[in-house]
Image 1 (tube, rainbow, N blue to C red):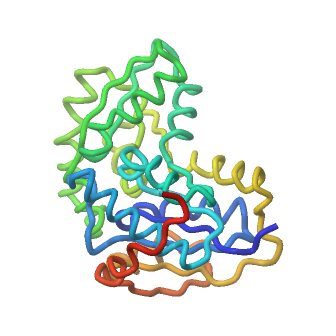
Image 2 (cartoon, rainbow, N blue to C red):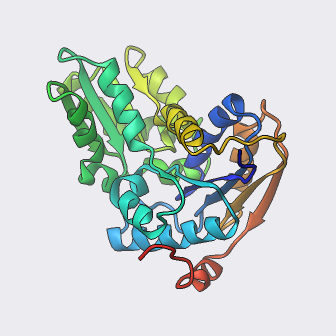
Length: 282
């Protein structure tokens, strides 16, 4: 048993979509979340920059004594998961892509047409496509980057005509030309616009990686005998820019769960100042 918190991080507020599933299924677990809202989005940045930011945040979470790190960010999972594992070999580090790819491969057959949407970095890495095909080589997969969606979501522009127009800009032709019937939301921000997508394309089957990630967390906790034994205490949500949008989105997502929440800010300068003393690996 291990009563230390589980660490989550994302480029912004998208990773918050993973947390309610954990709270519902594992109510004793405590969470420390970090959203890099001052430097979001990651998807259009250089891989070296994404790696550097991810090292800073993972070091910060380890300093907060987390028992596990969950990368609730498809971009980070697609380009530097193994780098983070090598840097921190003593702590379980989970990515979001493998569980979603496995679920998609189980759900679909050769007659299905699978579409993947994500950031530029995630799509260009081919991480989802390669993982899904690794489970089933017969599947038909198309993918498209949707770079404007994350900034709109971060600004809280969700239930608005601008969001619908942006979704249609990326998906109308993509879905029609490729005959897409199953859509993988390859960014943890995208579940926040799932209703928009379902309303615009009512016949589409949607795979939500935020939900699928829970199975990996449960299995890792069981494998390492890390389930919390005592009742959950407060959950701490850090941001590099504690914006009104970040706070409002947390309250919106956790409205029904009603958890004990503490909000804190850690500047990017403070994160950079932590670098250099945190590796227990290389």
